[in-house]
Amino acid sequence: MIGRPARPGLRSSVTAAFALGALLLSVLLSVGTYVSARQLLLEQRERTALRQAYADAALVRDGLATSGTSVSEALGAVAPPAGASMYVHRRGQWYSSSLDQPGEALTAVVRPTVDGGSAGLGWTGRTDPHAVVVGIPLPSVDAQYFEVSVADELDATLRTLALALAVCAVLTTLAGAALGRAASGRVLSPLREVTGAATDIAAGDLGRRLADTDDPDLSTLVASFNQMVDALHERIERDARFAADVSHELRTPLTTLTTSLALLQRARDLGPPSQRAVELMADELTRFRRALEDLLALGRLESGIDEADLVVTEVDELLRHALATSSSPDLLRDTPGTGPGTSVRVDRPQMVRALVNLVRNAELHGGGLADVRAVAEGDHVDIVVRDRGPGVPPTERERIFERFARAGGTKTGTGSGLGLSIVAETVHRHGGKVWCASADGGGAEFVVRLPLSDTGEVPP
Image (cartoon, helix red, strand yellow):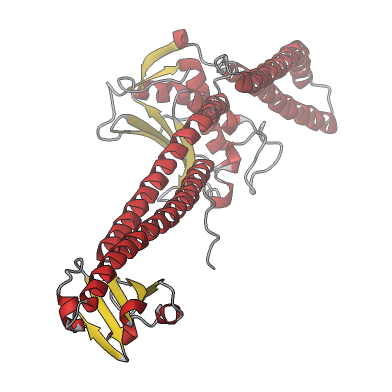
């Protein structure tokens, strides 16, 4: 199936509109100039031909009036202008100063007028280029005089004029296109600034604002945009404070419930049903505590990373700390090229928590942790956590990093649903990337890519 062609952008449309307008204007001006100039040149050429023909006709008449002078002698006594031919029609015969074409054919356009006793002027297309024909009756000598002048110089002048006007039209069109591009660039400049600001805000820079402007047409847009961002920033901060306050207020009753439940678990006079109920309550309370801790962690992440908390840490040390914190066996696999000296600049508590979440995810949902390894390449290092499970379907490999999202085979009630979203947010805040892929030996691989400490930059 053939896709629809892409629509031109606003800048291309404005440029094309300017070019088309310049083309139409230049064509109209060129056509008007050419028609006016052509008419003026034709009239001038006709006046010149008429004056020359009257002068030559007078010489021929005087020659014929002389006794004993033949028509050929009278014509030979007159020097016609360059490119002109003279013809005399007398007593049914034609006499000519040249043998190019018969006078009867060339003078047909004016002969009816001359036969009526008046001077005639017209154009004939029997020559290349066209020629102006002037006919003058000579009743005193019983003859008719005709002069045919080929308009070579007029034709060359008109061709040169047409070429010059065409070149001017092309140059005008190009100038219009250049003007349109410059004008569209000036018009779209504020839109580019808005786009850049919106991109920065979407990337997490909520302090980004548009600079004030003195342009009355843009001041309203700038003010409205900045007010919208201020309202959005305030709403996000208010929601974050609300979630943090709620989570903090829940910690005290949660601690009380945990302590009370521990006392119930140690009680010996509970029957099997009661013990089962207490165990279920303990599991749910543990899950609730983890969800609360994850919510607090997300709140701290969304408040931003303080540059003062970033320290250079060796990757191996970071991974061993995460494995020890998650009470998992030391399955860190040595990789050539990665070891002491391979360091990243991170907020240690937040990055350790993210790695612990990946390890616990492998334990809870991936059939157990298979191994952990780090691979340094170029200006970054990849931390790979592999599990022993069935893997994650390709259609769900991006969705599982969303909040409260679980893969299709994951059982509910086994986690908060925030672990992988915390991983994604933490890695993003450190200028890295995280994704899920299929492992070569089966299972799933979660890859965390971080910039090395000597080249990495952390976004503000």
